[in-house]
Image 1 (cartoon, one colour):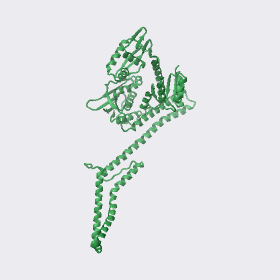
Image 2 (spheres, rainbow over the protein chains, first blue to last red):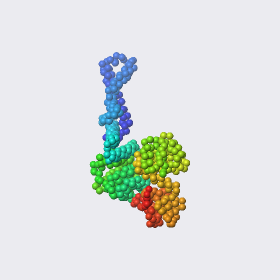
Image 3 (spheres, chains in turn orange, brown):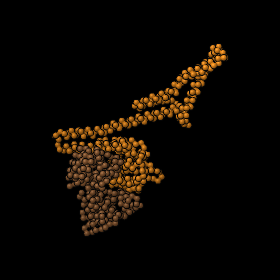
Image 4 (cartoon, helix red, strand yellow):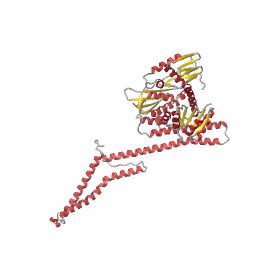
Length: 348
Length: 227
């Protein structure tokens, strides 16, 4: 890597100038030799001084011929990278994202090589995510539908005990609910993933927003007799209110879902004066999330309980992560057998 | 015997809603779009409208705006597949009283309908009655048998608000914004002081109690709640 970065345009111009210089020099050299030979062997002398024009025209003509020949031969070198690049781009365009190129060692060539290969890698990565997602989603969609259809068909048969009927109907209700919730989540996910920059930000009271989100779940936490600790001062923040609301709703819902009865959920905000960040944490006394799972839980469709017997579709945390990324913040989890804490840090 | 109007362009949804509502002993009318709904409103007395948003000819937003523009305060519950926050805001701006996203939990819908009917009754009568206690909005008086107290305006409004939504927790900021206004300079202490005054006044009245929920806010709890 050169320490001085010569801008690509200038580098190309210099390269071009050098090539022209080489071509012209070679041409003149070759023509010079030809003339020398012709003079030496006496062919030109025969024409004599009055026709001084003829040697000049001959010289010119010879230059052009030789120059073109030399140029054609020499330009194969600089044109080769261009051809490589064009071929590489065509391969990407036709869907072969494994294409990579190497244009040689000149600094400008290395720059183009790096840019191209990075582009190809990103495309390959996106393609992988997309087909992964489609596969996962299709599977997540089909699984409950298979149950629903299966049990409905069984119900069509007449000889089932009323207990069995109730059981099968309950399964149909549960699986349909799961499907609906999943489609709602996926819609939210698609919306959030399609955003690359954060829009619609405003100043608002983060503490009040947290309180409202907690209150949304009042029925759920009173049913489990949970204690909610939510003592905080008022903290203003500048962010996208609707998107952050989704994050809190997801974290609080999970905290409640995985909390044992009569447990405690503690929501706290920390805003140290020294840094310009604000951190919201949601703590519960739920089961520990193992270290290997701590990263995976933020993946789409991941659920700790692979039998899918708990509600929810495993997309909430990946939406939460995407939203915090959009805010240039980050989300993390710390878990022990006694408590699990999810923390979201945002720049103020 | 309450009269409900269900407005949705999907036949199966109308049938489902009818079944759920009739199980609660409500009388049900149906319409498949906003225009038909208006016609039914002209011909029958309706207590509450459950309306979808996406319908041909006249959608849910249009219908709501039309009613509100002629000062019709009929309770409206929007039930729709549209789930974005922007859709909810649009619904509330149009004038709906409540908003649910499909698929709805039928139990929750019934509870919300009951709450809406209760509030409509309170709004139209401007009175809240709990056992022997009556709160009269127009006179700012709270009466229990022979004991009648006229309250200062803010104290009354605070109590009225909490008792209109019994069991619901309100944060201090929500109460301050509603009763004192968002731009007022009043601080938290005002709410705390008012609450303690209310508690002192009605200490020992068995019908209701104001509970604090630490860190979150306050709620009024009714002690002979049947509904």
